[in-house]
Length: 387
Image 1 (cartoon, one colour):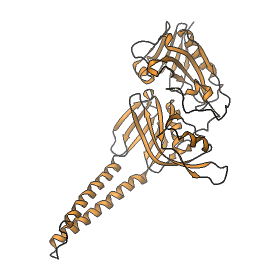
Image 2 (spheres, rainbow, N blue to C red):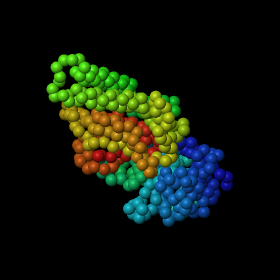
Image 3 (cartoon, helix red, strand yellow):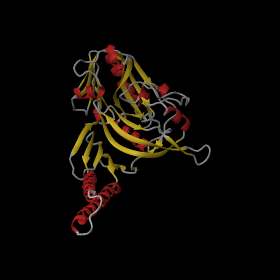
């Protein structure tokens, strides 16, 4: 039996053979994951990104089952392992994503996804589980306490999937100080020109005020008029001028050092780089990102136009990625307005702090659409955290 190649999303290729199963970053690259003789060995980078052993291969006893499932929020098939309960994971099973297929109709990639999963299960001698596209479930299901995941949980636990979520809006998405724009290489978070100009103008205003304070302070000492009482007042004016000069310099520096955050789909990395000064502040490859986190204050209602309409709401929002070691802030968006078609459920849910799944039908704002859009581009999960 000859080997067979199955191409998946993000330039990954699965190589199937009679006794071997490999996940390749391109058909001619070294294996990210190699399964044979009942064991599963990962490359160091892939192991770190999925929190798998970097030296010792996984044994069949470590794998509860191989899962291929349809994720409705991504409209894509996902292949992964449901790892067995372990003390390091609070004696809970853990989902470990391996590969996914491009978004589209469920029937388009169902056969290669199932074939890849069945082949891996056979070589590892573990059970195989297929999760088909789910039917809508009652909206009363609780989705605030999911399993610990590094990939879409809906592929493992369809009982947590309620009615189909709404699709994310595409870029450009505009905020008070930021814009998320689509560029040839991917997506970019970029400071708005008005924000940069505002920093420059405020800095200039402070510098002008500082010159006036210095002129008044020195003038009262040298113009020969009656002395100012109390005598320390001119010196206080000069001290205020020094503070204003410092503030003006800080504002100008913030404008000059403004940085873009680039989600480079061509290179497969997230990079924070200076917009005017250039240079990369940090880089994180896509395969090291475990999940994207959108954190916010509890949503505050702003009223409805009419009874039965969606509730207008507002919240403070931050966006981060987690690379397995630290959280890296993408943007702090400040106050973000939006709406909710399920306000009663959102109100009850936001009384409990902590992490949960993100549903756009519950939080329909530009910030939450941006988070889902980027998570889809990264092929990773997105979590909502209430502070």
